[in-house]
Amino acid sequence: MATAGTDDGAEIEQLEGALRGNLLQPDDTEFDDARTIYNAMIDKHPRLIAQCANVADVVTAVNFGRDHDLETAIRSGGHSGPGLGVVDDGLVIDLSNMTGIRVDPGTKTVHVEPGCTWGDVDHATHAFGLATVSGIISTTGVGGLTLGGGHGYLSRKHGLAIDNLVSADVVLADGRLVHASEDENSDLFWALRGGGGNFGVVTSFEFQLHSVETVVAGPLFWPIDELESTMRWYREWLPEAPEDVYAFYLVAEIPGAPFPEAIHGEKVCGLMWCYLGPQEQAEAVIQLARDVAEPLFEHVDPMPYPALQSMFDDLYPPGDQWYWKGDFVRELTDEAIAEHRRFAEVPTPKSTMHLYPVDGAVHRVDEDETAWSHRDATWSMVIVGVDRDPYKSEQITDWARSYWEAVHSHTAGGSYVNFMMEEGRDRIRATYGDNYERLQAVKARYDPDNFFHVNQNIEPAP
Image 1: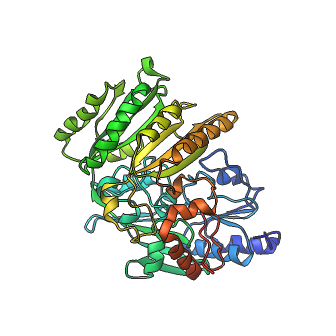
Image 2: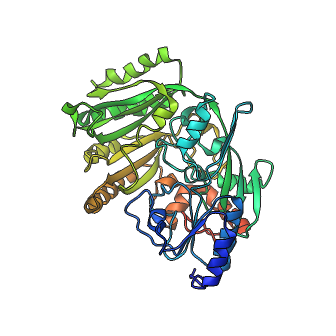
Image 3: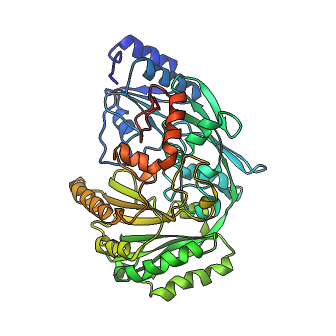
């Protein structure tokens, strides 16, 4: 798409007057902050940023972008690794000021606007002893994580974020606002659950909530030399563990405070726990890990669920350089484990590999019930190169790519779309598997001209 019409001052002025929120241009003092996203590797320069205040603003912005043939990106929390929430020389529809939340404790549901972070949602729902499935960093936006599928600490017991999505309000490419649920526009609702931002701008999410208040959680680290023995134990133990038990496997380097000075800089493997069962039973579960190998460090305690959700926030603030690669994993073979050991000594203190469990309740949803494919995977793997220093961007990228290439042949193929950079059409097809052609058909119905294409794009069927 070109940027036709955007040099017409009168039309831009007309757009500005039609918005309740702000319209930012490159000369505005707030513009640079507004175009900056979580991943500091991304440095894109839009022509216009429409900071929407409400649904009417979203409709106005979509109509303007379509009518003026503008490259248009949709920004919620700005956590997209490849920077798909911003675009060069086009329009950004910024939803970050739309932060309304309404909890209904009677029905255990919550309505969430798309500019909310998961920290906002946790704050609102925790007051009622409730929570829904999200990720592991509370500054992540609700919109992107949900539309990509959404897995986190509650997934073994309560499924993916999309398995807890009850309904959504969506502004389509033609400017119409529609409601999507199992009973209304059900084909669109199916596609939204895992198909990313391909089908429209979601202006309201309705989620099912669950009784979650205090969890037993925190890290347990082993020396990196114990990776092969602990990962072999983990591959057998985790799939058989009760669904109250969640633990993702990781490799990392121990950063500074709050960890003891004696272990700063140690390369480790380990588990990040979230136990949802009776607190008095947690110790016996954790002891199983201690029996495999002696921990170098552990700090697993009862805590409010929002405290667990925000535990990584300080380690990963906005402004770091990020490069990540992911894959779904059905089983951890001995050959795969050997490759993990070969690459597991991370290059920088923030770089890491995580194996997130996506079994349990996730497996109780059929492969074709939502757009999310690979319901038979046991883990969703991500390899992440991270550092504050832009001069290390090449180093962390090379490490993440090399690690991924070494283990990719041992995976199920395809990836959680939120763990992908811009990797091409074949990777997107592999991610959606047998659901891809059905997604193309839904795309053809709701966005036949592919207006919403600044995303992990699914092209409309001919």
